[in-house]
Amino acid sequence: MQTQTGAPSIATRQTPILLILKLTIVSVLFDIALLSVSFISDSVESFNKGLAWNMVAYDTLTFILLILLQIGIAFYLMVTWYRETFFAQEGNLIHRKGLLLVAEKRFKLSNVKSVTYSQTFFGKMFQYGTIVLNQQNQNEKFQISGIPDPEHFIRLLEGQQLQKT
Image (tube, rainbow, N blue to C red; front, side):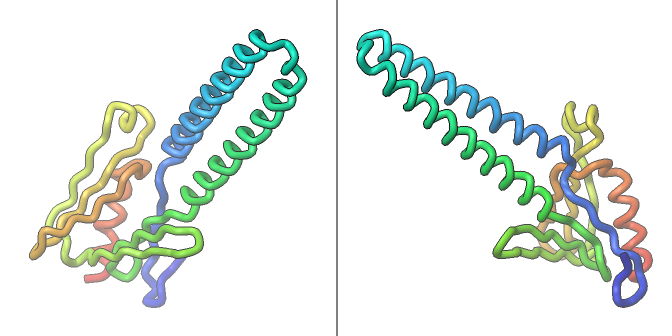
């Protein structure tokens, strides 16, 4: 991908590991909810045997609704992850996210005073981290979280900045 001036554009998004982590958390929460509903309905059923058939219908309906809600939330998480991108283009670092209302934040690479990155224990294990860019004259920071191989992305940004000057 090239820009209008012919300089290559650099693009990335958050690591898929974070998406998998979010999907796992959603799955565990819905499993707990389903077990709780099942336990409650079993407790009520043991007290009143006449409600047994109603409880079976209630359990089935609850199960279907929880599964549909879980699928909807998982789909939303995947689409929002896919639609959130960071890219360097024509001397700017751009963060774009959103489904229907797309928000865009720009940061001039020529005004960068310092670039730092950090990685947690899991970030080092799965090769992702957080990059922070600080501007020269202002106290404004631009933070990119969950970027795969942050050292490599910083080198690409430095190359983009050198091409622009």
